[in-house]
View 1: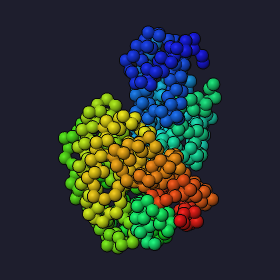
View 2 (view 1 turned 60 degrees about the horizontal axis):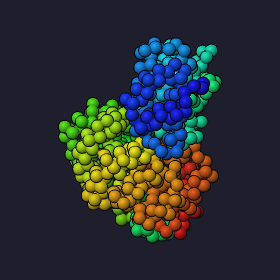
View 3 (view 1 turned 45 degrees about the horizontal axis):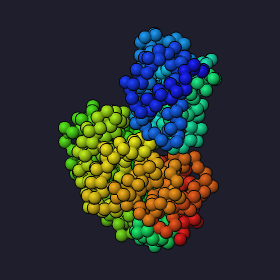
View 4 (view 1 turned 90 degrees about the vertical axis):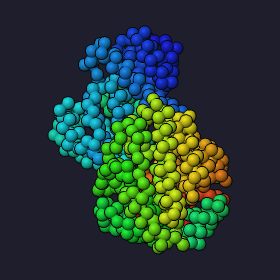
Length: 214
Length: 338
C-alpha cells in the first residue's frame, strides 16, 4: 500500500508521535483528512519507525506506550467518523495466559492491531478453553498470547495442542510475545507457536505475514 | 579456598582461585526435594534444606535465601498466586491507583510475610555463614509499585503524573532500606536490589533520574551491607554510568544482551559485574552450549577479579535441565580457574 502523501508530511507525523504529542498528532490527522488506506499506511509507517528505534535501543517502553495510546485515539476517531470498517483484514483473539495478570503488553498489542484487525480482547488470566471457544465463536484467524512469566510460557504448548486437536477447517495461527521471547529469540520454537513478536509494535506486521497479506 | 573467601576476593577486585559461581535457584529447591511449591515455601526449614542440598549437589558459591518477589506484595495485603511449576506470583493489584499507596501504612519489617524469611536467614546463618555467603533480594520501590497497582497503571502514572510517581517511590524507600538492614542483621551477606523498571528498556534515562534516582541514592547510602543492582535480565548499559557515578552501586547484574567485555573494560575496576548467562535460553541449552556460554562470560568478564558468574536475572527455573546446571559448574572449573 503506497500513499500519495509527501515524505516531508509523513516525517512530520512520525516525529509528532515519537515525541508523544497527542493533540498535535490528532490535529495533523484531522487536517490531512486521509482516506482509510492512507490512514492505515501512515500508521504502518509510524509503527515501523517505532520498531526501528526500539531495535536500535533509542526508545524505551514509555515512548511506545504513549505512541500506542495516540494511535488508538486516531483509529477510534477515524472509525467514529467513518463507521467501523468491515474491510479489516482478519480477526485476532488476544489475551494473557491463565494465572498471568500482566496486561500492559497485551494492551499495547491490542492498540497496534486495531487499525488492521478485528480484535477480541479476552483480558488477563485466560485459560485455554476460553481462547479456543472465542476463536471458534469469531472464526478467528489468529490467537495472540502475551506471556510475561516463564510459567505462562510453559503453558503455550498445551494451547498449541488444543488448536491442533480441533476439527475446524480453518485453524487459527498462534502468535506469542512477551519479555521471555525478547530475551530469548529462539524460545517461541519450543512453544509450538507459528510466530512470535519481539515487541508489541511488530505484532500487526507479523499477523499480516501469518495471513499471507502483503 | 572456601566459597566465602572466593566471593570476598572477587568483590575486592582481586583474582581468587577460580571465578565465583552463583547458581541462583528458588523454586528448584522444591523440585529437587520432591515437595510441592506451596509445601516448600511454607517452612523455613524446607528452604534451608533445599538450598543446602542445591549447594552440595551443584557445588557453587552461595546459598540463596530468597523466597519470591511477591512476598513484599503479600506484606502490603496482596494474595499471591500459587503455581505448580514456579514460585508464587503477585495476583491482582492491591491499590487502584499509585496515589492510594501514599495513604497506606507501610508494612512492618517483622510482618508475618517476612518472619519466615528472617527465620530462614537466621537458620542459614547458624549453619553456613563461616564458609558460604547467604544471598537474598529486596524489590526496589520503583519496581515494587508494579505489583501494588499493576504495570499499566504504574507506567501511566510515570508518564502522566511524574510528581506523584516520585512521591510514591520516595515514600516506599524507607521500607526498602529498613527491610534490607534487617536482612543484613539476620546474617545475609549480599542482597539483590531488584529494579527492572529502571532499565533503559522500560524508562528513558531522564524519567529514571526524575522519579527514582534520589531514592536509589538514598537506598545505597543507607544500607549496612552489599547490594547488587539487578535489572532482572534487562540491559544495564545505558544506566550503568548513573549507577556507578551517582547511585554508587558496588555491584551490578549484567544482561546477556549487554556487551560484557566492553562493560568490563569501562567499569570493571569500579563495579563488580555479575552475570551474564541467559536464564531463559538455559531451558533449551545442551551441555556444549552451556560450556560455550560459560566460557564466553568468563573470557569477557573475569580478568582481574570483580566478576561473579551467575544468570543475568537471579532465578534458574526448574525447567532448566540438571545436566545443563552441572555443565555450568564444570565449565566454571574448566575455564574459570585463575
